[in-house]
Image (cartoon, rainbow, N blue to C red; front, side, top):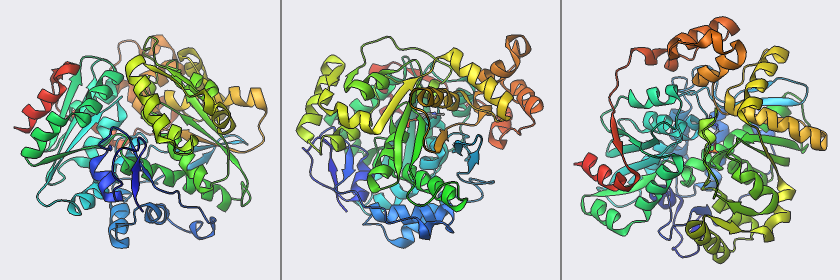
Amino acid sequence: MEYISTRGMSLPTTSAGAIRQGMAPDGGLYVPVSIPAWSGPDSLIPASYQERAAWLLAKFLADYTPGEIASSVAAAYSKEKFPATVAPVRTVTSSIHVLELWHGPTSAFKDMALQLLPHLLRYAVAKGEEGQRTLILVATSGDTGKAALEGFRDVPATEIVVFYPARGVSPMQQWQMVTQEGGNVHVVAVEGNFDDAQRGVKALFASRDFNEVLRNRGWQSSSANSINWGRLLPQLVYYFSAYTDLLAREVIKPGEAVDIVVPTGNFGNILAAFYARLMGLPVHKLVCAANANNVLVGFLRRGVYDRNRPFVKTLSPSMDILVSSNVERLLFELSCRDSKSVAAWMESLGAKGAYDASSLREELTDIFWADWAGDDETLQTISRVYREHGYLLDPHTAVAWSVYEKYVAAHGSSCPAILVSTASPFKFNRSVALALLGEEKIQGKDEFELLDLLAQHTGWSVPGPLRDLQDKTVRHKMVCSPADMGKTVLSLLD
Ligand SMILES: *Cc1c(COP(=O)(O)O)cnc(C)c1O
């Protein structure tokens, strides 16, 4: 299957080509030339998560052999990486089934894709020009950075540079990144917010000069952000897997529709659900949950995207984003693949920070329902859900829960909901402890004391990789301005 650019000005490429490049040369994003159909769940019911992943990947990665796909998914979702379970569905209320995506090495859902991407990329590079080395550039709102570092550490002929917003990530997220081990890993704080870091990385991918310097030195740059199709594709798997699990438990009947509720930032996770729906997964509504940076809410309700507004720091930092890259793919699909319009909207976004796609309003509101929750609602939800159900939510998942309640209040609930849980509550220990115990009990406590406090209070156990962080030393202290990101990368490669 070939891959084409959403902006229509690049030549089609293979799946390996799309994964190698990350982004199309015309500044667009790669999408498959056609969307394969899902032909029913029966064979997936007894299958393991690895088998379910191999089944889905084979539909999209025509130039990979079955052996390459099988070895990639076996390595990515091994017992070593996901000791307990890969993507379990917990039924918390009669209608809410929580899909827990944080059982990997960094305790956030980014592992689901970033444990697999390095393997897919390694084969993609082997299928390309000989002797090329790969430079992975990442902008992170907190969780992608750590997951990418873990996924790519010590991968041969590969260097990885992660840019995170200085003061824009949680203490635990920052600690996870600056203590990262590995001979090929670099972590740099950018003086700015996530959008500054993401814009900087995208500008590097688009810069002829920068890429020519890289090529002359034998490097090809690629992305581990969800602009890379190889990052998005693994995220389709868990939607099919969750649906199949509910079928197997007879919570739903074959063909019965579900609502899917996703805490959203860069629009990667919910876009994966959208593609699963395009393939035929029975989804009634995709419920998009945002925090106070709620640009997406206006967009999904009216089709008008406007990022001209203050950037707010919230308790769900991985969703503190005003420019959600993957909306570009959605525009492409909903406009019946009209790349001219997509290019015009994206140009307007670059020039004015806004675009008007209200011609798609009906399509958008037909598929999506969107709302947001503020920090107070987030904390109240964590505390109430724990009290009523004994279930612990991290702040991002609590945003989703709160927005789902608003959805039910507005529409009533006719289908079971798959609510996506994107992080372990321990990863955002301070906010969760604040919600459960109040300010007084957490004052003056450091990150690791808070982990213990939370474990004692709830009886839940601290994920091993978070507990072990305590003994690590800081290895990465670099800081740069958004304007100097290119120079910084080149100096790190020397
Ligand atoms: C990345 C992230 C999100 C947002 O996901 P997108 O794919 O960027 O929309 C939500 N919650 C957590 C914990 C994350 O790490």
